[in-house]
Image (cartoon, rainbow, N blue to C red):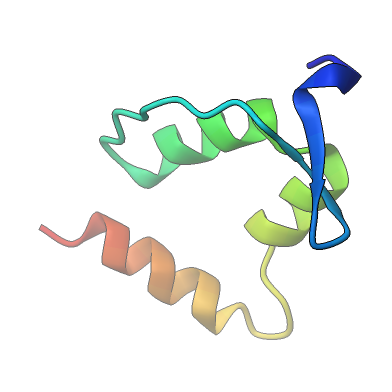
Length: 65
């Protein structure tokens, strides 16, 4: 990703390019996100904190059939 692809919104750098995602499952979404979110931001979003209850709940919700 080039620096020219980034814009500052509310004090945060973000990619100004958007694309449609064909999300089949959470691991697929995570792979797509890892390619476009800066490493520090991705780690913060994808990691859990304390007992990781929310992370487990989110994974369960995406996996629900």
